[in-house]
Image 1 (tube, one colour):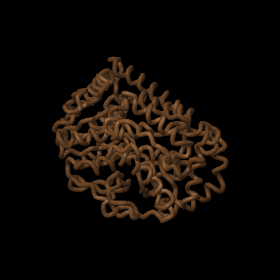
Image 2 (image 1 turned 90 degrees about the vertical axis):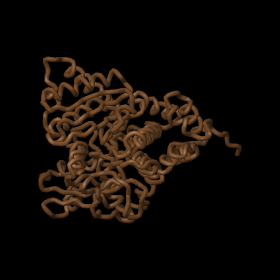
Image 3 (image 1 turned 60 degrees about the vertical axis):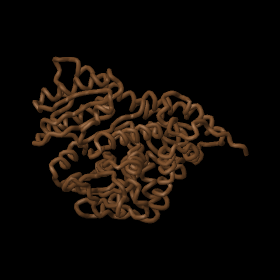
Image 4 (image 1 turned 30 degrees about the vertical axis):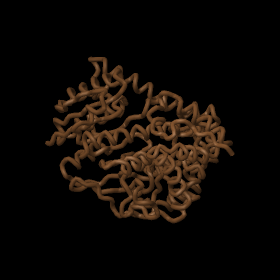
Length: 458
């Protein structure tokens, strides 16, 4: 048993924070550890702390649970920092989406990614001062751009975690394969990964997938979807597979509007989205996203009831079994110098993924051993995927990363000008001016030089 100090930044996310606490409680080797919950929303933070204590009491785990709205206090002397924060929460993110739609960008222009990256960099810089030896486990998005930004601009140890790589399981499930006999390998950038190996009982399962597409896919797409989004087995996902020769996994098929030169034709309007992603238009459509936000609100109400009702057991909602999230197992392995396999986002040193610069963070399999994260030898992506998918995505990321890191407004403008929805320079500048003038955008706006948009004389 070894106690450690863990800070959770953005702990007001009740579902996520409660799962982390529960996972710690059912990990005996971390008994007695301190978890400091930090959020700027004092009301939400108080709710989460009460729930955390309730889970800990019910399981008799002996965690030391504290909370604070002061980020520096949370970070000081931490051994691990879990960043799940979304700058301004969903209200600010949704306002930024609606602002972009007002200026002609259907379903938004990913403005909240820029503001959250500025917050990530602040947190990483604070860690350099207050807990320079700590591990930063990045959970909130954008993991790809954020982890690359923080590893370039600071000296702290950063690892990004995401469960999108398990998307192959849904593909296997729909194909009727027994998951005990399925294995897969994926590599790429977070939310932009491709399945390089897919086997069933030791045989190439891509052959089975081809047969499923030929004989069953149309019938599957014609039936009511079991979820309001089913991205891994959508028509868009299979089209991308046929285009590149490798299956896009997890969130990859729904993120094709981010590399501005690839996949925007799936997303032009709701009817087009329905064609490619099913009757609701996929997770990011106006229907799918509203359902997601509604589910979040309902989950929060349910968690509030569980927390505040002394007659209800928290562990009836948060069962005392460890989740599939990698966060607590990774902490346990690092603390005890253990050895285990994880799917992580780490710098491309080596390189891990050929054809990509070494200072870019990539998602891959790695062995955690002796307190270090060591990438395993990876199947490489074909040149067609590198040239057609990875490099366009990297262009998108670099304009965001360098725009935030250097405070270069022109790079942010270039990013938006590359969007297929952009009709004019004036359209982009009008949106930027209104966005950066909002007080909630001050963290990013204060980084930019010059602070006001230059007027171009052409």
